[in-house]
Image 1 (tube, chains in turn cyan, orange):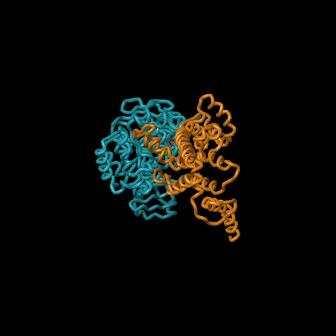
Image 2: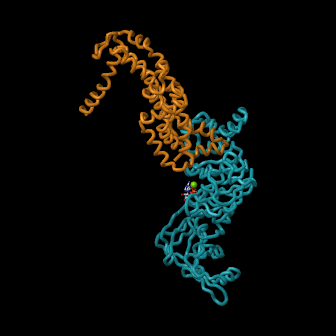
Image 3: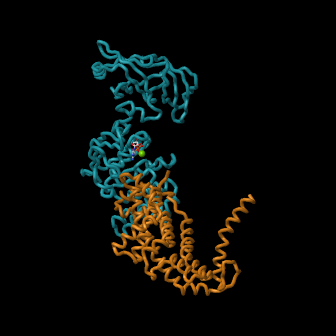
Length: 365
Length: 265
Ligand SMILES: Nc1ncnc2c1ncn2[C@@H]1O[C@H](COP(=O)(O)OP(=O)(O)O)[C@@H](O)[C@H]1O
Ligand SMILES: [Mg+2]
């Protein structure tokens, strides 16, 4: 087991645009890190540099304190689960599992014992005599996992291991992977484009976009305190509502205008904003931070809205409304009794507001 | 539909008739250029063997086997390198290789002969088989590169991260998965070397080393008279190993070999 440190790692395949740019990442020993981001953001490239299949163009890559930039994959003592599993099609499952141990010259009796043990744990004992072509996606996925586990690696690398499975199996495997990790707490770097996997499995989430690290944080921190507009809109379903806003500086503070609302920003935030040249901002509210205004309340944070779409989810209801020229999604309790065309009044939970600078897209509050 | 079938039948007959004649003549002690109908006798085969068909087949076998082993091993390693490594000017190199594959041997034979004179490699079945191998290598590289290209790279990476050396990956992953291609390349090389006439004729003047193709030719023109029966028998003996190999390998290849399951999507 070991920690993993990337310092200023960049990878250029060709020309100008880097696949990964100036990546700093520290993964602690035994930590479960999920690298998440949209397709093409450089997740696989990052993992392949760790594995040794690609050499970083710039920067340093350390595993267990040792610089790994030029160490070939076979000497890195890592295990990897490939997106497409990469099982050896001409070998039985048993041979696939035993492959690495054989290369490392483990005695035959211990190979057999360990293969059987891991197969039992993953529920694939009855498949040992078959070839990968005769297995279902979920079964292959387990075999790939088993092969990686038998490696007893310093670090586990997983590239979208669940993306080829159906929804039910994916949910089941998420739990199983976490269970395995708590049983064998090996440093794990798990790549996915699925924010749900990131949020449910990670000790910390590393969010990437366009080859750059956007934020690395605990799932709840990423959700509550996104560093920029991209981070805010990548996590959360339905997506965060982003509304155009304007700042007005006055003698005694800063005023924020959005929709029909005016909000005075006091305290340290007001002080900070009065120092900045920013006027155009984006105001973010998560759907659950908008609720129906109680009867009679006509406070500062209430707007009139027209219901456009009602999506009952059972335990709650997603309601899409129009407020002036903006479309807003809010998460309301079940059985709201609302229907399309209804006129309602909504209240914003101001303390949960996220304020972004339009130019840098960074969060201001 | 009927006319198509008829056409196919005629084409089939055109190929079949000479074969029927061949078998007929081989078995008929009084064979001529005409089809005579069955007259079962093995005397023609005895005559062919007495004329040295056995020894010539052994020589052919030696040349074909050695050149196949050499050509297939060299081509597999070269194709692996071309498929997997960054080779400078790879595209042009591949074109040159394809061009070489189409070059007639006659063009190279005189310079090779001179080189062999200098090296003292003439009249040696082993060195002759090296030239035979060389004539097959370009096409075999081309063929094998395409097969190795089909082996998913992740499989090699998966083996590498498990600690496998390059040699182990080649031997344990790439070669088994490219085996259909390697078999095809071997068969083509074998058949090419088996039928080789000019190269052994020029490079090996020792009558004891003559392969079957040269043997048939000399047998045919031995004393001015064509003995159709023994000649047909000689031909059958000479083609039997190739036909046999073809039958065995076609079954093997039909068994199918797929990458299914190793890599999804
Ligand atoms: N071998 C390669 N050669 C050239 N470009 C590549 C190569 N691998 C990846 N890229 C590019 O690098 C970027 C990041 O790719 P990748 O790391 O696979 O993204 P992700 O796994 O996040 O979807 C993409 O724009 C992709 O086209
Ligand atoms: Mg990827």
